[in-house]
Figure 1: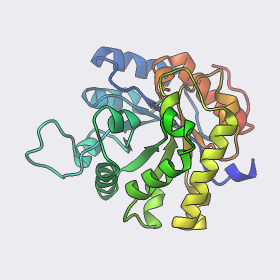
Figure 2: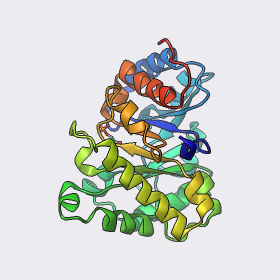
Figure 3: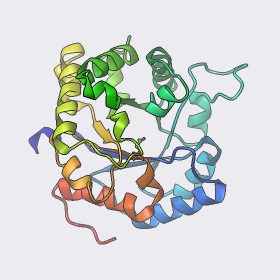
Figure 4: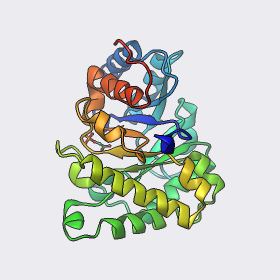
Length: 266
Ligand code: PGA
């Protein structure tokens, strides 16, 4: 528990390619009603680009923050289909996910691209959630730490100790994303500890101690307490369950329980 006292846990909801405008507003309203007076946990929702402005307006005055799912590295110009850090900030976004495995594996995004996106996001005044994680094959062949090392090294290339004030890392084993399989609490803890030690040896002990490391991969209200209770797990990045208001609120409540706070009536 002492490991966690310096870090405020962050629960993120990654809505992925879900929600029309009306569905997004309805979901934001439902979350806002369920998640009031959140002090010990940070809660961020990441709707699709098309719904950011409306969700920002819906969440005004609530404890929920706005995030986005991706960002492009250039500031502006002829980049059809892309969205800049300035554009995101102009609609109220504070935090952006970079390197999500669906972008790495479905859209072919390299760690070099992730690195450029992360740099541009920080330079543009955003905080990043950098997602890393091994595939099932990589885990089965004992490559997990090699893959994490490589993804972290390439994605954080050129970053400074100071940059980590605006960096959250999300450990998301690819085999656990959207599959209903989760890492066991032990598997999660081992990977998180590896990442934290890596930050300590590659950057600074202070960086290791202060950086929030979220777990992602089929987190639900039913498995959240065990996962979030691990000493190096500082929150969760939630996909499927973030679209269900009671589930997502239940995960935030689980985080509060783990922190030893009062169980909150929802
Ligand atoms: P999931 O997605 O919770 O649906 O597994 C997690 C993520 O991709 O961040």
